[in-house]
Length: 399
Image 1 (tube, rainbow, N blue to C red):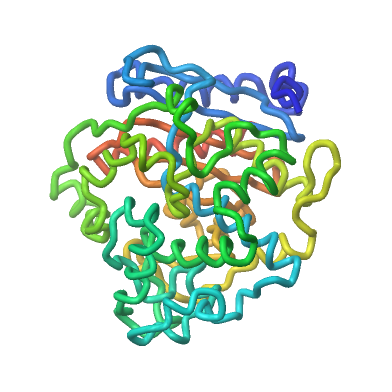
Image 2: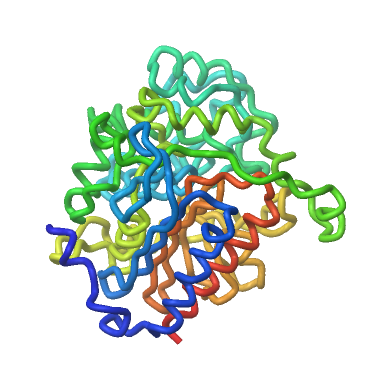
């Protein structure tokens, strides 16, 4: 479908408040105007259409620094996890795999060092016990190397016992299972079964070289928040819990070879508009905008069911609220710590990404939202405030 079909003729056409949508755009632009971020891209959607999409700032694209546009592609980092999970949902609804299955049923190389009991669900809700398993992004592109990694990993606790956010290791065996079941690489499967039926040409895990000319190079910006700022808020510096993410590792996303790989936990390279429209399909009972069904209703209900129980996220001191590869906002007043805003309903769902990337949908309002930036802020507190601000403004646009 031509992308133009997905753009509303103004916010009012999809029953959003135009002034509030403008306030959202103004807040997103502010960090670029003030020189905090080099570029960002934001999109808000409802009723299957983008109500507004704007791109601000400049970015190196294809080796040349130039203005970022709505055609510029950004890396979504862990917002990728929702896309990879939604690909697995297709196989679950077809009866080809089950959340209760042990991963060794599909990836026997994983069954070593006490990981034999690990289930698909454990991997998807971050209770597999391998939160910082060793391996670089580049390992994913080498099948022999990643299978060696699976065998090497040792869980830090028995699978299913604790929630600890897994940066990327848990999604490698998930993607490997998808490849073995379908005979297709993860990126190929996502293109054929999700992106193309939804008419979203820029929803890609693994970016072909020609399209990399449109991708914004990632860049570190700012200085870290001071220790006293964290102490004042009573929180632990977030990156103390993300030891395997270094600045150099993030900058690897500028490597053309790595961009081509099907990195299942952080390799979605897309636009904010395509993220917002992906979530619109989930709000539309799993149907594409021409009525073609992709996900079954029952599958989506199961996908959004919280499966982590009362397990606590030790990095934030709150319940994890993990469903089948996505996060649920919850009604405990802590949604802002889970990647949502203060105006989202308890039923809102999605997945944030490292560096401030955002993707979510709210069934209560019908709004979906995407935000991407190529500026990775060393100041975690400022990044967090920015994310809460834009999410809160987006969530209130229906009022």
